Length: 374
Image: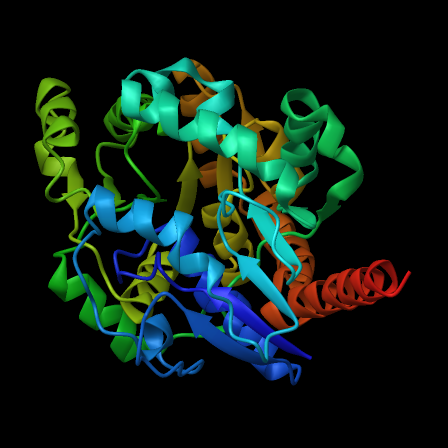
């Protein structure tokens, strides 16, 4: 079996879609599935290299994205048995080659804040019209599957739930040298140390975490909050300044995966305050790395973390303060959660996830073959 995969989103901007695409290609390669890339002409896929070995590039202009999703993506290599589109998009019609579309979340349909501009509403109306052409859909969580049933009830029979994977680097130990290098680079000197990894849009609710960390650190008379990737985010800087957290907040630039893994291991707690997720990659990475987790209690994150973390009402600052305090003062509790979490994280190894995709691809190709020969 040979799978074509849309690599047009691979810009090395370290988005969730890029992380997913890289991991899926890596996992398929590990279980012997041949993959051919689309959307990056002339580029060879190197599954063992960061970003699949693709060169970094700037964000595509709107017209180039439009051309790709309407014209370019339809030119599937003849040798491909199936096309995998790693985000919620589809060509303007059904094609002869079966197409599997991964749906990470339905945030643009669920939350009005993500449809404020005309171009956003127009784009997602187009998605609504085209998604029925997909041969099969992958939902990365049961929560996303339920959202698909709510917004696209006629497509419910096409959905298979397959969780996201976690890169193998997060399952590996780090050296003392790696920890020291990360600590020196970002001048990490305080304890307790709370780590946040993720985006900074409205639903991520980072302001609540900053406010809770301020109160916690006041109680402990020390502490620091690490916000990965926030260094150039003006809104985060304003929040930190308004709350007087400048001396207790470390805002990093985007970092390599190697450095990110070291930051997980340098932290005492991983915090995920998001109010809405399709999966919860940060918590899954924390499970694999063996870091205690405090997270907002949302359906998707609850699926990932289960009882192996402390879940709180996302917007309640007092709940956050109490949960962070509990995690710091209850080492027996957190050690037990970490031990169970490492076992739970095995379900998110990319080789294991890739076998679920292989099973789906086999069913889709076999079913399409039977349809075409009737």
